Length: 189
Ligand code: G4P
Image (cartoon, rainbow, N blue to C red; front, side, top):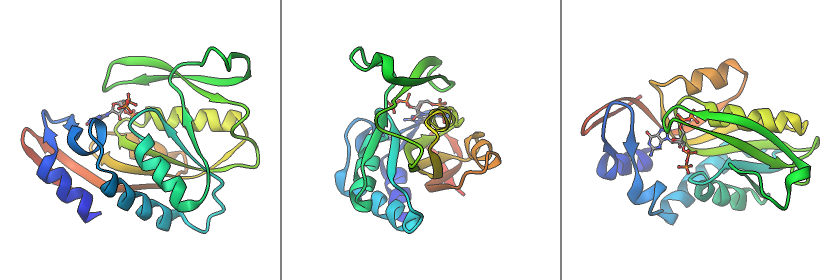
């Protein structure tokens, strides 16, 4: 999506070959108009597939995901990174390792919000190694839901996330695909 690519070129900061900072429009400050346009693009791409819910992983996926859910007229489910004390005995959980941040967390889904009749669109801000989305898929399988596809704002195509998800049979629709980065230079696919 040209608009997102232009914004990345204008305001994104490639601090290294691996990490792109987008704190002024996605990760810290959010540009709601840009997120709404991205959401419309996801909604129009995935429309007509019988999708019942949008699912995202907290926290930066929430803004594009809630607007996509609004556009599609369906609920949003936010996968939590820590089990809620009040929901504890009614949860699916799976461990996710974040290579970028060097952390592990328990991704958590309440049994009350996703079930076997759900056909889900997963939305997230970044696709790097695909660990977060793969964890989300594990939880959705525990709930016997099916996955329609994965919508991503920024894919780092030089990392293995897309390949991993495509090998598992999922469609990955990314609005900006970064082929390579170096300090202060970004190249799209
Ligand atoms: P993966 O899910 O694709 O495997 O990615 P990985 O574990 O390597 O990255 C985990 C976290 O780091 C995710 O955020 C992801 O959005 C973020 N991330 C990965 N690459 C970049 C990057 O180049 N720039 C920025 N700004 N973030 C990146 P998270 O831990 O889920 O936290 P949150 O930001 O959603 O709260």
